[in-house]
Image (cartoon, rainbow, N blue to C red):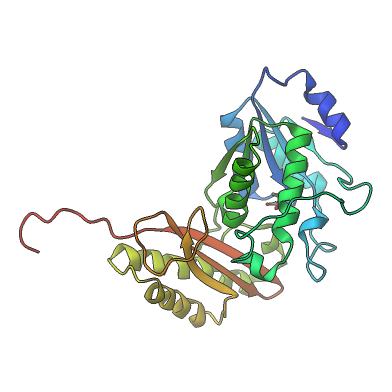
Amino acid sequence: MKVATSTPQLRAMLAAERGKRRIVLVPTMGCLHEGHATLIREARKLGDLVVVSIYVNPLQFGPNEDFARYPRSFEADAGVCDEAGADVIFHPENLYPDGAPKVSLTVHGLSDVLCGASRPGHFDGVATVVNILFNAVGPDIAVFGEKDWQQLAIIRRMVADLHMPVEIVGVPTVREAGGLAMSSRNRYLDKQQLLTGRALHAALESMRLQALTGEHDAAVLLDAGKRVLAAAGISPEYLEIRVADSLESLTVLDGSPARAFVAARIGPARLIDNIPIARMTETPCISPC
Ligand code: PAF
C-alpha cells in the first residue's frame, strides 16, 4: 500500500493506471472504524485500484464545532486501510495552501434541511472538498456511507448537476450490536452514553415497523419515534420523514422511496442516523377482508 501526501504525488502514482484499471475512491476524514472498512471492502469489489483519502476538511466544520479535537489517528487508519484492501492512501497535509478558497461550491435547497439547518455552510464545505478529491484522484467510482444520507444525496446531485464523470455508490450503515450506527464520534461517548445512543436506531425502527403494519401518517409515526427517544431521555435536534433523493418533507408515506432521519446530542457528541421507511405492501385480498 502506497501513501501520497500531495496531489502531484498522487497523480504521478495513478498516471500509469488511469484508463487501464477502474479507480475507486473512498473519501474519509480518518479515525477509521468497521464502517469505513466495509466501504473499502465494497470499493475493492467494485474496481481494481482502491484509493482511500484521509483528510479532516476544515471547510465543513462550523466555528463552534469539533475540528480541533476531531480524532486524528493516521497509524491506526493505515492499518485499517491495509487490512481492508486499499492500494493507496491519499493523506494531503493541506488542500487549501492559499487559505480559504476564493472559488467554492454552494449547495442550494438540499442543504437547508436536516443537518444543514443547524450547520450552515457544512454541505458547501463537503461539496467543495469532494470536488477537489474527485479532481485529484479522477475516480471511476466513489463510495460513501448511507449513514450520512444527506451528504450522499447532495453528492449524487452535485455529480448530476455538474456532469461529473464518476459513479456514486452508497453503502448501508454498519451498526454496533444494539443498533447504534458506527461513527468516528462514538469515541467521544462513555459506556452509559453508548447505551443511550441505541435509542436513536430504536426510534427509527419503531417508526419503520409501524409503517409496515399500515400506519402511513408521518405525524403518527413521528410521535411513536419521539416516545422512544423521550423514554431514553433524548430530545432530538430533529426527527423527520423525507423523500429519499429530494429530501422533501412527507406528510404521508405515498409509496415514493422515503427515509426516517434523526439527530440528537448524546453527551459530548452530536449523532445522526437514518433508515428507509416504506408503506405496508398491499397484498391482494382473495376472500373478503
Ligand atoms: O463523510 C466524511 O467523512 C466527509 O464528509 C467527507 C465525505 C470525507 C468529506 O470531507
